[in-house]
Length: 482
Ligand code: F0G
Image (tube, rainbow, N blue to C red; front, top):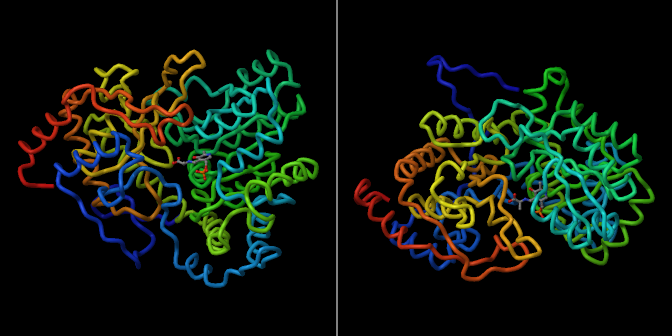
């Protein structure tokens, strides 16, 4: 990795790319922002991008492409079957992961649908470090249930544990013994564990999980959607891996996994997804679903242009300068906020900076969605769109009661190579103001609540007129400033 010291001693991340295409941004006045979030049912997913200044909702499909990725799109080979584009993407994946077979899908959750349909039966159990929303829904839809076997350290919000995404081996053994190995559909390891703050697993831990899978004859499935960040953390935080190249670490991780699936909206900085395996029987079983749900076997619902961009993006993921950009910006933002006393998840992970709403707005009860309310408040006072990752992102229990989340987070995603350091500093400034004025924020309640994945399109309203009060306070402190 490029090592650059500053004469001033200052520690700031330095971009190892230059910007050659730009998109104009606008910051609407606070009155419009209040109107926009009301129209959006107090759900940041339902905001229109024209009302958003910094879109930190997600890094999914929003990473900046490189010039080489854009160039590759021009040579895409359009054909329903047997396109050269597919062959190029397939051979890139074979080279990086060393797996014999590749099944293309339109995005990550499509892989989850196929893997779950192939392996999960009613009564199945799937142990994993932590669930992801769509993963859990697909497992549940097929009659299975998720068992999280993450280490206790993972749920400590402030920590210096470098690998909070690790599986607790004793807990994993326990779940297998309790349920019997016949009931275990597969063991799932998620790279860059999304819902607990983009936290990585270590290579050492993955090796131990592999041993458990071997002992019981279980399939190990890797969700590699956030692998790029996890690779960077293994390289920089795991002593034994410091001398390994990113390519070597990737191959090692892949060799320990039976099935690798990914969202190409994250890994590879394009849009699409795919499943890789060397298990012929499993490949044949999963293959049947591709033409049914995705498209023909050589495009799986993806555009050939995106496939070309993905093939180049995957290769660029082996470049340490490229994969360090996200984590370094996230670390900068997290540390700046922590210095100002704002509760954030530490150590900084991948994916984005995570505000700890449980503490930030500890006066809001969990059934009034503190993280949802904080995400809405942040949008109103800054035009920054984040994402609720807490109770609102959970599904109710079968008896209709709220399933209170372990963590209440507002995720401020850092799409790679998209934002500049001054934009990040603006975010830090506004979040710090909001923290000082946090007592004004109150909760939300549902007006329309979908049964499945309610956070995507549910509509809510504030429990009181706290939003008008927040606008007043903002105007008092900032005057005419946007
Ligand atoms: N697995 C992980 C770890 C993810 O983060 C995602 C998507 C998926 C699977 C599903 O992939 O979106 O291509 O269907 N995460 C996005 C996010 C939605 O915003 O974090 P997908």
